[in-house]
Structure formats: C-alpha cells, structure tokens
Amino acid sequence: MSAKILEGPKLKSTVPAKSLGQLFFECAEKYSDRICQVDGTVNQSETYASVKLRSTRVAIELQKRGITSNDVVSFCSRNTLDSAIPILATFYLGAKVANLEPTLSVKCTRHMISLILPKIIFTEESAIGLIEESLETIDSEVEIIVYGRSTKYTNLSELITRKDHEDSFIPAKVDLHDVAIVEAPDHQKLFLIPTIPSCTLLLRYTMFVLIYSHMVGGYRVFCHSVEPENIIEAIEKYKVESILMSPHLVTQLTSFKRNRDYDISSLHLIICGGCPLTPSQSQKLIELFKNSIIVPVYGMTEVGIVSQFHPDIDKEFLRTKTESCGKPTFAIKLKVVDEDTNLILGPNQKGEIRVQTPCALKGFYNADSSQIFDEDGFFKTGDVGYYDEDGCLYFVERIKEMFKYRALPIMPSFIEAILLEHPAVKEAVVFGVPSGDEGDAPGAYIVLIKNFNVTKEEIFEFVAKRVSEREKLKGGITFVSSLPRTPTGKLMRKECRNLVLKSLRQFNTE
Image 1 (cartoon, rainbow, N blue to C red):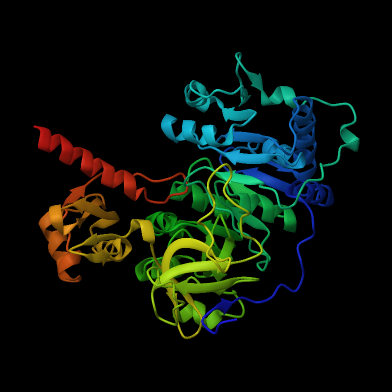
Image 2 (image 1 turned 120 degrees about the vertical axis):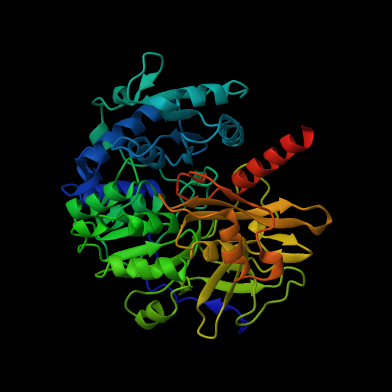
C-alpha cells in the first residue's frame, strides 16, 4: 500500500450478514418494551413493539400486492410516527426503498420516478397533487397509498388492521449485495457511526438515525420544524444526548437569542456534517454547548462515513484542528489525487478525495456507473480536499461548485466564510456570474441580520480587503430575505445562480 494512501483502523468485529430488514426486525424484537421514536412536535411516542407490529402488518399487505425484492417502493412524506412504518415493511421484504421529498418540483419528482419506476408510492396528503402530476407522463401503473386520509386512494391506516399469521411473519432473505436504498437528490445522507454510545438522537429524518437507534435500542426524536426554539425545547424536554447538525442549523441555534434560557446540559455529542464549520461557527457552538463534544464528520451516501475524530482518542485534535473533518474511520482507505495527472498527492496538496471501503455502493440504480470508480477501485467523491502531516482530512470544495475567473479557480466556500465574518451578514452564498471572455466572476446572495443597516458597497469593500483581485465580488451582490435550501439545510447554489442568469436574460431582452 502506498505511503500516500491513508488507512483507518481495521474493524475489530464484523457486521452480521443480515439484510436491513432482518436487522430492523430483530432489533425491534430485542428492545420491544423500549421507546423507539418520539414526535417532539405533538409529544407522542411509540415503542419498538408497536413499530414492529405495525410494520409487519404493512409488509403482509405489500406481499399481497406482489411486492418482492425486485421491486421499488417510494415514499414522499415529512417525518411523523407513521413515516417509517412502510419503509421498515419494505425492508422486511427486501424491496428497494426510494425516498422522494414533498418540497421537490414536479419536474424533479417526475425525473426521479421515471428512473426508479416504483410499484407503490406512499405519500402524505399535502403531496398527493405533486405525485399525481408527476405520474401523468409515466408509462407505468403505480399505486398511491396515503399517510393520513383520502377518499380517492387507500389510506395507510387500512393496511395496519390485524392480519392472519402476523405472529409468524419473518423478513425475507435477500441478496446482501443488491441495491437497498435510493436517495432523492439532496436528500439526507446515510451515515454509520458504530463507535459512539449514544441513546437519544434528534434530527428531522435520516436513515442513519433509523438504523443506529435500532442497533443500540435508543429512540429518535424528530420535530416537524427545525426552528431553533423547537430544537432547543426538544433537547431540554427529552434530554437529548446526541444530535446531527448542518452548518445552517449551527448558525440558527447559536444566533437564537433565548438559547441560554433552556437546560441543554444533557447534550453530550454534536456531530457536524454537510460542509465544514467556519472558525466563528465552531467557537459559538463551543460557547453555547459547554458540556458537549463537537465532532466534525465527512461522508457521502455512496460510501458512508469517511472520516471523523474519535471523541476519546482524538481529544487534542478536536481542540486544535477545528477546521478538519477528522481521520479516516474504520475500514477506510483514502487518497488525494491530482485531477489532471491522476497522480497520488502527499500531505497538504489539494486534489480530489477518493475512497475505498467495503461499505461503498455497488452502483447507481438504473444509471450509468462506469465512471464512479477509478482503476484501483477507489470511489471518486468529486470533492477537493487534502490531509496534513497528522493524517487529518480537510474538505475544501465540491469540484462542481468551483468555477474559473480569468482562468483561475474560485472556491465559493472561502468567500462565503469571509462574508459570514461581517457582523451584518446572517447567511451568504457565492456563485459564478458570466463575465464574457474572463469566465465567471464571483457574485453573492446575502441575507442580512434583522435591523442591520449596511450597503452593498460596504460589503464589497469588506470582502475586497481580504481576498485576491480575482475573488472580489465583481459578479454583483444581491440582498435577499432568505436563501433556497434543500430539505437538509444545504444551500442550493445552482438555484441562486439560475435566478441571476434569468435576471440577466430578461435585462438583455428589454
């Protein structure tokens, strides 16, 4: 193995050779009397025994509809106590799970459905119109089942009535190398963190929380809204021990003026992912959650969790390397490669991060997967990063989010971090704006803190003093009330750029 390839610790134990359906089913049986999930908005909870019984009954109904491991079942719902029930039932049958998102456009939803061609779509009431419209041009019979009430379609409640032989039901045995999960674009990512002994977890919805809470017999707490007050109230009320945060949520919580009015001392572990925290965000988070260990992680749906610091072993790194996203985790092999020459780079040299792991995806469902691995079997992440002399990884930028101005690369996240240092700036997104032969000049959408008066010229000069000539915001500055985000809180940089391009086209035609 090359000295320039980083390796994480070897696994001391192996994951049992079971399907996700078997894992969920057996864990629910083991922890039957414990609470499995809590809806923090309506203050309702459900035990593992109840979750197992309801999901078993739905699985039996899906079997009657002919669902097998060859089929796809899709879901379009926000998180409720019902949302996971048919998902678990689908896993019991070894069928493929495809998550849609109620806030996606018809165009995006239709494209997703055309790729996966589900036999059944479970949808919340508010998304029925979205699903109906998306199916109009799909040449396939798809049954719609509704979470909640509908006079037109079957309701989930009709599937959960008592079934014959429900006590003898067992999950189907499936090919463990088959595709199990299909994620909608920008949906929550799948992470696995087997080293952290937490029992209570809080997040809107992730497959990680569903899997991990079952494995340890803990319960997941979710809220219908991610407003900072709702999150902090839930931490206090349910004595939440662990939470996954995006940088956007970090900003919301640390900016919430009444955050110190609540008892948040139960929170032991904060896992931060999505993109790196700025030094300012890290410091504010440390000041707010004084009893918590803050662990940055780097991972992807396609390969799972790639790097993190161990809360006990890496205490010094957690304190001194706040901008790093950790060291390679279990069974991970990682290299940084020059995109042009394909040569493996050494410490402190920026290039594409590539990963080899037994947890990697087999391929994309119904899509070309021929270019996702290199000749050595490493997954091409599409992320620019580097590692230092201690083997600590640093994420720099998505390759696709970088752009060139005057033939030189521009990294949006660098300029965004500077913008966030301005006392008037609450949020910011930077993108490339067409500038003739010079390429794409940096432009920005900015959300200002309420009641803060500042001009675009002042913002421009603030940035100009801290960046190179090519990184100045010559593409323009626009003040907006909010930024478009994915359901997970990630900035939709492309959407912002498209709005600018649309405005430019309208201007040029007038």
